[in-house]
Structure formats: structure tokens, C-alpha cells
Amino acid sequence: MADKSVILGRPSGRNAGTDSRTSGSTHGNLSEQEIVEAALRVIHQDGLDKLSMRRLSRELGVSAMAPYYYVSDKDELLNLVAGAALGGITAPEPGPPWTERLRILIDQIDQRLSTYPGLGEVLLEKMLRSQRDLVALVMDILFDAGFTDRNVFCAYSTIHTYLYGRSSVSTQDPTAPERTGLPEVVARATAHLDQVHGRDVYRFGVDTLIAGLQVQLDRQNRSTT
Image (cartoon, helix red, strand yellow):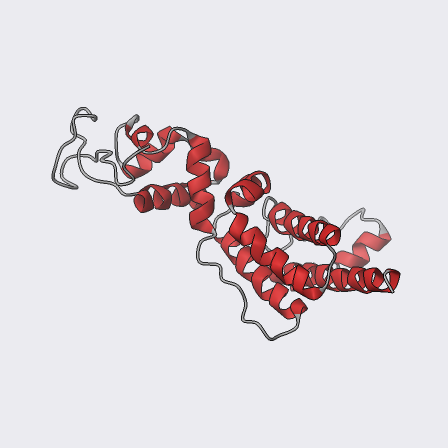
């Protein structure tokens, strides 16, 4: 597709100008940013499964066929959305231990995933194809820590599965189950569930993930000496 600021067409009254490729009362200019922001709004409001080219056109207030002048299909749209949702994530400053830098990076990614519910599902599939710079940021920290090539891949896969798999389920505060008839161990574990929040579960998971990676690194180093 040639022109990244292609005219898609909006309902009359929103912008001046016309385009022969649209029909009816639609006219105006839309940018890539506007298209992506509209798609992210749909994901945020309704979830990823509700995002379609037709739903996108309604969010933009344009004709049903207008988005196809910019993106050929939903798959291409999702690549743009993934890049926009994760855009702005930066490499942690050098200096702190690798565990701290990895935590900072993971927290940045999780914050973006929490902002756009359902996005993790598509990123699980598309990450290595459309977000290679972000993959490289994570792997760079792992290489710097001293993991072997093979173990960098394994470590990244573990982080990837935790972050994006976690985002495909509810990240809200846990809900206490019905108290009657619970097995004793379940009753004990959930007795104070009203004091546990989604962020507590997230922090516990990240702590466990990073501690486990440190154990694996120690084991790797012992086996090579």
C-alpha cells in the first residue's frame, strides 16, 4: 500500500474534503494513528474478539469499506495495533543487576497489556513476527546475565508465556468462592482472599519467575565449570 495517510472518508461535518474512493456523505483524512487508536478503543471497550473491520469503521464513523483503503485485512490491522500498544517501551538503564532490569522491562510490558484487555492473545501468536525489537530488549538482558544461547531462548519463552498468557485471563482482584463445601486446603488458602489483589498475584508471579531464572542460571554456570 502506497500512501500511509490515505483518505478514508468520515461522515459529513467532521472534516472538509472529498475522495472519489468513498461513497455517500463520507469524506476527510484519516491517519494511521487514528486508525490504530480507534482499534485500541474497541479492544479496550469490548475486547479483542469484538474487533473487526466493520466494527472499526463504526468506531471511526466511516463507511464499511473505508478501512480497507488503508489495511487489507484484520491480520494487518492487528500487526499495527500490536506495534502501537507496545510502542514506547524502553530499555532499562544499564548498571543495575540483570534481575532488576528484567523486572523493569516486564513491568512496562504488563502495564501495556493491562491497558488493552485481550491484546495478549494476539501477541502470543505475533510477537516474534511483528515485535522483534521488544523481543531483542528482553533477550539482551538475558545474554548480559550470562545465559547460553539455548537458555536465552528458553528463558524468553517462559517470560513470554507468563506475560501474554496471563493477560488472556482476568487480571482483576480474585473473587472468593462460595464458602460451603470447600475442601479444607482450599478453605485455608482462600480464607483471606479479600485481602489479595490482582497486583499481589502479579508481583508474586514475577518474583517467582525471576527467582527461578536465577536458579537456572546458577545451575547452568555450575554445569559448565
